Length: 575
Image 1: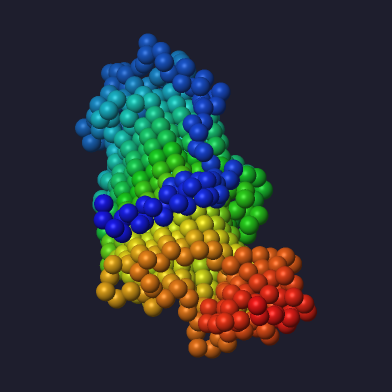
Image 2 (image 1 turned 180 degrees about the vertical axis):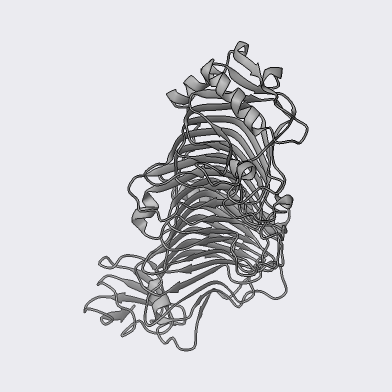
């Protein structure tokens, strides 16, 4: 182990000994807001559905000659509807053996926009369907706009086995974003074992309804989406959604007819008013495409009413030309993530995690690699304040930056940067109604100007509390300073604990327009406080009686000051 690694490990050990927590999972920041994501047992309705499908004696082969179902590429929709209805009436399970079943909506056959003209197979209530691996529902060539292949707007439905849906998007000449492979709308008590939906002109999988008529109690063990004109998976108005594994690859998708890659996951209930609470849970989620959108609402009240939980969330971003489009964009919802990993191309100009309005995100472990822009941006907008709570954040962006925080609530256990080109922490105050708290910052060979930069507009104070900083840098050109205060408000709002700085980097810098140069170490607004200052604190530092100031540029008799009397910034006496 080299000297620098020894120093780093020793520093982490000292922190764990003094403060009594592990660096990788700090209980100081942990709270009951961050979900433990314990395995949620199936509801009674889902248990009943699973029990009903256990008896294979009820299987009925849809290729039974009496129904004339075809697998030769010809439209076989009406025959499939007939056999499904037969099974429904006779308490049978339609069994789809391996083969390609071509389906079409009524509009394609009749040219008439009748009721549900866009649905190919519309599954009735109280039925189970079983698909053998290799059984494919294929959309007819050049299907009309609004077509949905497999539609479930019913109750107590089970789909077992492995259903595959082929949307034949390249054959569509007059499609729109409302087309879908699997379309779940206002469905209740639905269990799907495995669905693979691909090449759909709109969405591969859509799960939703309306705020009043929503889908409820939907369990999907495995969902996979590949290439969609819009999104692989859309989560709309649905409550008690539990997806155990979701693999979403839209690296080849994107309409209109470009098919070069697009977003994978979209969480977008239209015009959510917060009349009830909605909850979704995904145990494992992996997306590969241009990114993901979570555009639920704007206000904090709406954010509390929509909760998304994810165990492991892996995001791979493609297409470096999409400058300015964030990898993950979130408006007002409550997101609880155990492990979030974001990977971008090193030369891509895009924010990794972009939180706006009243987004409330809670993450145990966050890792972000690649990219030129900020890894994380948390900005207030229109009077709404977002928040981020994370046990640990690790940023590996040789050409990029760390956190851009603009008047937002942030609480981080460990913030670690490896070979970061620019700022690690950039905090700007447009109002003073926020706070940034970080237990430990670890910077390794990172930043060109400053590691932490603090500023604000028109006298606003960025309230920032950092308890430990460890900086090690083996580069020839090191940062200009560890902490830079651009404004007087930044000086007034910063509280700092200890700095470990074995490479003797300048620790504190003040911009030229700041005359009040000091740093608060500890204390309160009414209780005595401790300061480090440059020059005398008399007439400079406002503090309660009993406060102490250590003068960094002092000498004999002027190195320590105690505030013995007076109010405001007077009454400091040199000791």
